[in-house]
Length: 253
Image (cartoon, rainbow, N blue to C red; front, side, top):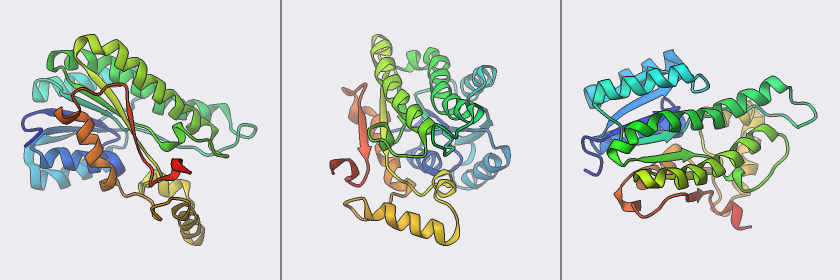
C-alpha cells in the first residue's frame, strides 16, 4: 500500500472531495485526520468510517480562519499519530454575488476560508512536514484559470490559491516539502449543489453546465481523489509548484 502508516490531514474532509480523498487514503492504509467546522457532520463521518477503518481515522473540529484552532489541530495530529506526511488543503466556501452587490462580510468570509485558511494550515503544518519531507495538496478550481460572472470572491480566492501553491513550493523546497494543486471543474459536492439552486432550477443548471464540458458530464468526488493521492505520493516526487486540471476538457475550448 502506497500510504501505509503515513498520516494525512484533510481540511474540509467530512464531505465532497475531501471525504472521497479521506476514504481513498484510508483504503491505502494511511492514518487520516479529517478537519472541518461542522461538528455534527464530522462526527457522523468519523463514526461511519471507523466501522471499516477503526482508529486510523479521526475527526477534529476546526475553523481554518482561526489561527489558534489550527495550532490545536496540528498538536492533535502530532499527539495522535506522531507526525504528518501530507496536508490536503480542501476546506472551501462559495458565496455567489457580483462585485457591485456583494457585501464586504461575504467577500471576507470567502477569502478567509479559501485563501487565509490554506495559508495558515501550510504555515503551521510546516514543522511537521519538514520532519517527514512531506507534501501539500491544495484543492482549487478551474475558475483559477477562467472567469465567470456572479462569483467574484470565489474567483479571486482561486487565483490567490494558485499563486500560494507556487510560492509555497519555492519556499518549502529547501525542506524537501512539495506543494501542488488539483483543480477540478464542477463536481457533485454539497457546496456545488448549494451553488446550483434547487429543484427544477438545479437540474436545468447542472444539465447546462455538463453540456459545456466536452466529456458531457460534471465530476463526482471519486473522479478527483486519485489525483490527490498521486500528488501526495512518491509517484509525483519530482513535481512541485504545479497544478492538474480535472475539468472534463472545459478549458480546452
